[in-house]
Image (cartoon, rainbow, N blue to C red):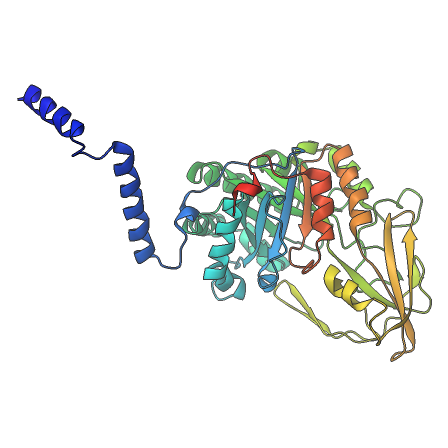
Length: 433
């Protein structure tokens, strides 16, 4: 009987009555794709092929960018052939450990728009991670005091990672003040437990932790050696050395100047302090694609700021502000560059300068409406090039960006990234069209 069947198959193959196996395979794949698209019309089937392997720039470095949900309409500028990790920002964590599903960050994360961007990132070999946020001391303390709450966060976050077909998590809990060693231990254990379960349940996944640049000088809840050991990487938020409340106009991310007595701290000293207690290949240097616009009597490095009144407020973790001529405000790279230019008739007497210690330039203009000068230290291709060379000279894991979308319509920031770090090894962008 078996011999008769074999002979019959051979005969039908000779007469081409059976389809080649390769044709059958592709027909089955097409049927599955079509069925999936009917069941899930808003999902890209390729998003299920996840997590993707770790990708690096051709230099071997990470290029890690945060994408705030409120900038999701301004992300067309991203060069995914350069970006290695797209960090969605973010979903707040409640004191009981649950994810805040009432927040707009959660709604945007679950949207079709987010799914499309995640899918596009994956097609270019860019990893996608979910940022969990908490900016309130009391809420962080409540979470750290409860193992059940911590497990709730871990379980719910992993569920969302799996559901979205993405590749990991970034923890951004920004604590103010020093809660003592007990909370440092609890936070470190939370990171350890999170990493262990995430790696078990999501193969090839990654967990990174965002920390202040001053976290060695002033640890707060961050035990840097333990977090570096447990996690897949530390994102140093190497910015906000000066903020909108500063009394002097200084760079938000001065590269040098601390040892010379110019600044209270700087990026180079912070990196030096970190590398004394953790490996360089786990440290990502975050840089700002924004600056603070200050009212001053006369533009110069460390000019006194004429602080009038403020019209800004915080809701959860995001700063909201209205622009007033006599207040200091944060401005994105694109906004500041579009504002301070000769063709803008609302301003006059534009001038520029360079901080030899901070290794960053400033732009200034006279605001006739308020009768005062305004100035902003703003990272650009020149200063970024210097910072990227610094990161490479220290053999850091790579660099990071706060934030994607702040460069809307400007290509120069991506040009310098590509020049310094190259296109990702895992991707030939010419093939992805």
